[in-house]
Image (cartoon, rainbow, N blue to C red; front, top):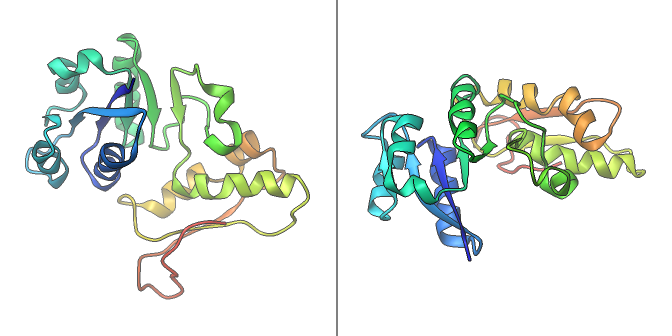
Length: 201
């Protein structure tokens, strides 16, 4: 039996997540996608894939018939928008997975501390740089002294460097990995000087 989910945010991250769930997940079923731009590529792709859509954001999402069966909502918008999304969705009893730097819930990196927050109403995914670096922090805690770096193969938002440094920095790093100092995170576009087109420690 699958768990029905929805995505808020029809940009690159939300669209990529929707497609990965559709193609790869055996436990999740994408029920709806919400955005704000009715002409966005993400909403157009969702419609072609027979996913329920709305361009009226979280308000439009909760009004969809498909929302009734949704248990989990992934928020791939912005930290500012996430605060209201969380308020609306929690009041309706939905679990929220935060893909923004808002950090209203606990920082979660599944390989490191995922089991500790299975019942959290809101889980913050730290950003891609944090996901790349925190497992390495756990390794360092167990004796690996090497430096940690996260490299993004493409920009994931309007200011990826700021988001990565904000959410993959020392505070979240200590909470998740138990390390004593922060990380260095580099965001590089493909073809930029020094960019290697990969991500990871």
